[in-house]
Amino acid sequence: MSPEVHYLWIMVRGQIARARNDERGVSAVEWVLITLALIAIAAAVTAIITDRIEGRAKDINL
Image (cartoon, rainbow, N blue to C red; front, side, top):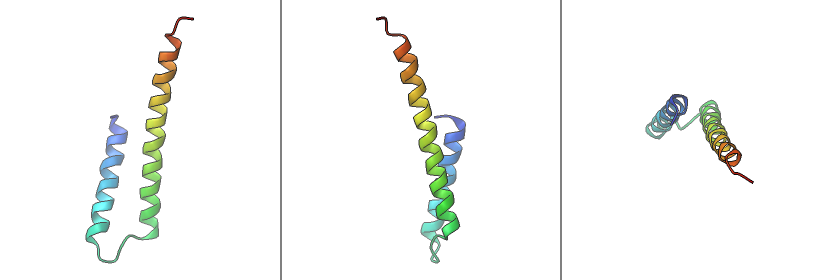
């Protein structure tokens, strides 16, 4: 896992833990930040998988 994705994962886990412990609940801004972090993680994973698939596809001899 890249350091950026690892950092985002830690931040998201921290936000979720704070939300669970806070009796007021999660504000809309926090939900937006959590959602954006999850989207960023999904985009990073997609980019990594796409890059690896394209690299392997170029290795195929036709």
